[in-house]
Image (cartoon, rainbow, N blue to C red):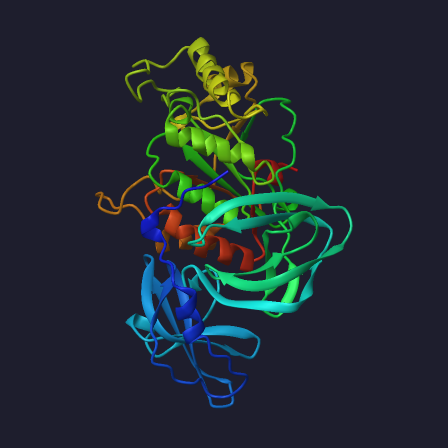
Length: 425
């Protein structure tokens, strides 16, 4: 499997440049360096720090970016147990930010070889290893589970797009990079979310959120695929890299496109992360009629509704083994008792709605405008609670750029992004 990353979104910094700017300090004042390199600051809030000569914090500054921003920096170094980047341009010029998934040097940074090899600790759980191409874009992955704790050897560590990895040289993930807890903690990071088997079809249900008791600190991220496809593959790759479980609701027509087929292939390649719901064949308004040339202008018949679901599943079935049933999402969110009853007659008893609508299908240039990436992430983080279901789109205009801050901040709040089945189980 090879996932394609939009080349505009990636900038590779040469290893020689990273070495030139890598300066490690332990409690002393930062050492000046004339070199300059690019830092990617994802949409959302960022905290800058000033330090005294002894390494204690002397001041902070909070800046929120509505969109992805790049800045220059002249120093990447250690203070205490963290790595900081000293920014030299933009709103955070003169301040230092903690290196991580929302503040980082694109590509690889801080690559350190181990001789002799060191030990990576793997607790019982599920893991995803990564291989990267020459420009540090994602090449392939390997999934596996451990029923008991184990160890593996590593020959080196590196920070790749802000996340710390160790390259494993023994065992099941030999040759793959595993995410680890930090540059000085060789504990492999497990997949924390779940995609268990779907609930039984049972009786018809309308689900907009799940009780906090059942959800147990989880939030379902769901993505419809019924129209625009431009960032779909980038979004899927980002979810894989960040080990985010999600439920995808594609339409049959969009799944029949080249990009849509590759989205389905990614879902099939990663059953540990993704599950499939049904968004009908032609994305018609099943309650009122309309929605496209293939849709009746009047409210569709029960037979039409059921055919829309079955025809879409036929398209999915050519790529993905497990059925999309019993989960479905009505296009435009348009449903009533008659529509839900018809869908249940085709095996789709769980009508999945949402309690947080990002409105990411609307571009910023619209009147009224759609959300910026920063506003989109803020809406989800501020409103999410255990059991929430978030509606996004694989064609969302700012969704790709909103995801890093959204996922990092949800996890910081103790809310793990997961699938619909993860919530219901």
